[in-house]
Length: 339
Image (cartoon, rainbow, N blue to C red):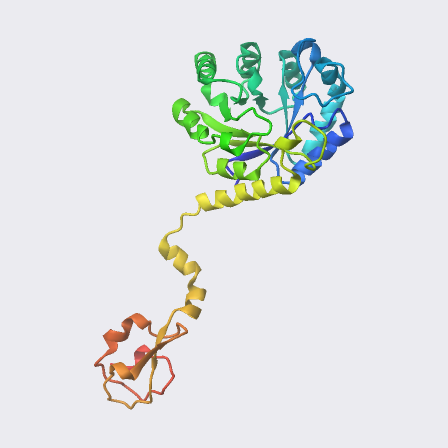
């Protein structure tokens, strides 16, 4: 099957809570639901955070502060390699968002990622931008925590210093969960028209309808949070789809791709449906027994299914013609029956 133009990213983030087993299981769950890419996050507390950083939601009662949380849920290099290998075994791409240059360096030096995805909190972090763009890989940048001026600055910075073909602007709304009335998915087209670069959508609604609608736009990537269950622990669970919902999004992506690329002519479509036409279209049949030499009149013919002889549209054409041989009531009319 031809690769669909929109690739679907399963955002796992930090849902694993530092458990390697859960992380590996989430790869399996995402792959089974049809994800093309499975994405995690790489946080190195000392290079990302200070003791002043607040929790987004204060659900982590075992952690004294945000840095303690980052330390607790972090994996070491060998564990990241195991997660990457689990993605390879499932034929999905491993992706991991870095939140510092040092995190990006670890991912790049160990050839763990094929492209970059940066969270919208990094939209003004040009030090990190320099690192990822200098790798010559594709860079997906979420825009949820940036305004028009921030996006303009990012675009102009990339345009002046790097290849714009690397840049993918991801529309998102950084509200967890995002109410549908705040989704403003039309921003996808606005970004596309304004900057003439590839675009995508990073969804935080926890509602599959938002992804369905986003897929009607010309997006290169759709990123959707995935949780094994709506009651699973984590601040992103309310913003996530469960596996069956995620699978529906992937199926919709596949279906809409087929619909967008279905461009047969009417004649080609008719030929594909010809066997059905033979059952449902109608032909001309003899209404009574008639002898050689009789004239065909209106009462000589009836229109009935199936489509086996002369098409019903030729009714008027046959009026007044002479019958060449005896014909019988109920038989289909054929070319050799009349002059």
